Length: 309
Ligand SMILES: [Fe+2]
Image (tube, rainbow, N blue to C red; front, side, top):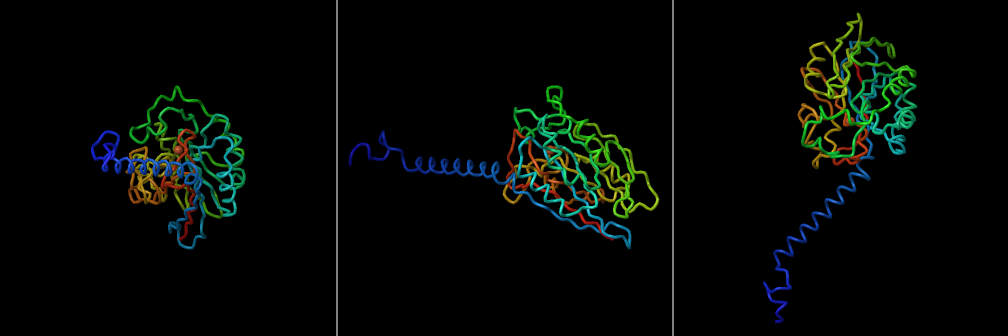
């Protein structure tokens, strides 16, 4: 046997090390493949989640609410535009946008093009932090290990918040920025109450108007902090809509979230949950920050809620 072929001889890698190297290589390749899947496929694997809730008074006709959140638009996104345009065929009675609409200071025209067919329907909206401040490239995944709620907004690029809200208002959508409103939709009287983004600490609850004969009290917020959900419950909400969590965005197989980016437990950070006895729809959102364009085991979603008696 030549010296180089003998076990433990310089020039030959021992068997266990070769196996470990092969395993590490396979792990890296699998990780890279998973990452590529998350960037190229998963974040464009748009879903329509449907929910049915018996919340309306006896004898009421159904009410269909389309809930959108966390579009995080930057210029040139074709796939999300096609998906959102397809939602117009649902002909919702009300569209509710729970914020984080932009991810680039010049993305307002692209956002309005994406939303264009839905702006023809009745709508209501609240802003998220990414309606005010743009993302920055450093540490886009820092939300995975730390609280980002108080981070240096002074350094963040300002987004065209006023122009965006003016466009929504011009389309007839109702702003719910620390504001209550009464809306008549498809023969239903709705009491709406919304807050500015709790993630930024901008939330000031207005309560509900307590309109006589209202069929539904709907609370709307971007970030589902527990204080926000509990306050809506205390105010008498029948249903709350929120976004912000991205459903965990980068999840374990099976969709288990590791983080919620707020104080809501990660296991409850997407889907229909209950807080204080009130159903809360937490949207996993439609987008990602442009500096972290990846989703894993957490596809983007819009939600159609059908409310009946
Ligand atoms: Fe977001």
